[in-house]
Structure formats: C-alpha cells, structure tokens
Length: 235
Image 1 (cartoon, rainbow, N blue to C red):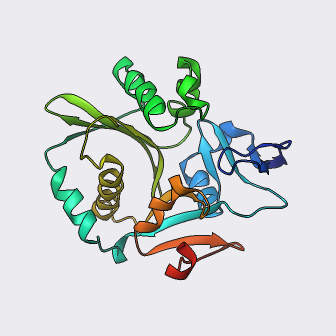
Image 2 (cartoon, rainbow, N blue to C red):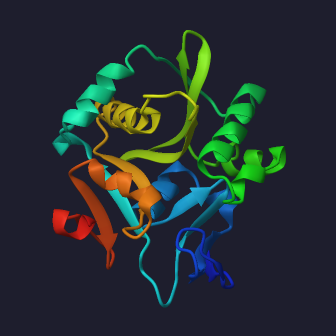
C-alpha cells in the first residue's frame, strides 16, 4: 500500500523567487513499471528512486505534458533537424556507469546550467539521479564516428516512453541535439506502438522549458484531466 507525504517548503528551481513543495510516493521500492506508468499519467515524475509531483499551494505553474505520437507532424525546422543528425549512431543499453558519460554530463551542466547547482554534481549525485531505477529504463548513446555526443535516459512504460533526462555536447556548433533527441524518442514510440511521449513538466514562464510546446499536438494535465495545449496558452 502506498502512502503520500508532502515535503517541507524549499526554493523553487524553476521559477526564481518562488517557494515549492512536492508530494512524494512511499515506499519507493514497490514502484514497478506498471505502477509507475499509472503515476506518470497522474502527473508524477521520478528522479532516481524518488517519485514526486509538485504540490505548491500558491502556484500551479508546473504542468505535466505529453506528445500525442500518432498525431505528431514535424514542422519545417524539425524536419531539417531530423535529416541533419541522421549520421549519428544509436546504442540502446541498460543502465550502467561509464566515465565517458559522466564526463559529458559534467561538461553539459557547466555549458548549459552553470550556477544551477547541478554543475557541481558529484559522482554519487549523478548515480542517484540517473542510474537508479525500479522501472524499465534504457540508457541511449548517440555517437558521431565513435565520438560520444549525447546520452538520454528513457523509461519504457505501458502507454508510452517517459523522457527522464538528456545531456549532450553543447560545444558543437550548428547542432540541435536536444530537438533531435525528442524526435528520435517520438519515432521510437511509433515503432513500439506506444501512443504518448511524456516530457515531464512544462512551465510557461520558464524559457528553458518552452521548447517542449514546439512538439505539437501536445497535451497538458490540468485538474486531473489531459487536454490539448492550445496555441493561445503557449505564449
């Protein structure tokens, strides 16, 4: 039997100046792929073994989002990005530690999220965040002529894929690894006959999260119901 408890108040990592708290599921060792799939549909997300969803009394900015795979049609920029990165080779692997991955993760945090806290993650924090899972999880490598360019952690759920985290070589100019990664995951959903790609939380006021709304059609979870995110709500 699961219990839910609410954390204490802490500084929001998405919206500066805001306070946040989360609803957490316990015990985490009983959450398998089937159960976690239902929790994701209810707006939960995981960080390692930690399964949570925002539960902020004064703010409902964090919205769970998912791409409707069968209705997705790439725009012109996305089609160009897809073709541009076809030279990358892809390896789907079980979760494991690789120092090459960790090195890329550290460089990515410094390049893209300097000052955000994760740019100083030690090996233990990296392991707890990305390499611990009670569900069906894949580690995806993207390489360019054997050179590691991107790593993505993806959960395989009964009704979709859930994108856990992606990091890449942000020093490569004219590359769009992040966009290509989502397009690749959408294609994997098609190949697996899975209807949804879950992209975690979308926050309208957070510029770093706005990219998720570019993958249309996309649904948001509001008042315990999934509904289309209208263009008028995106900006």
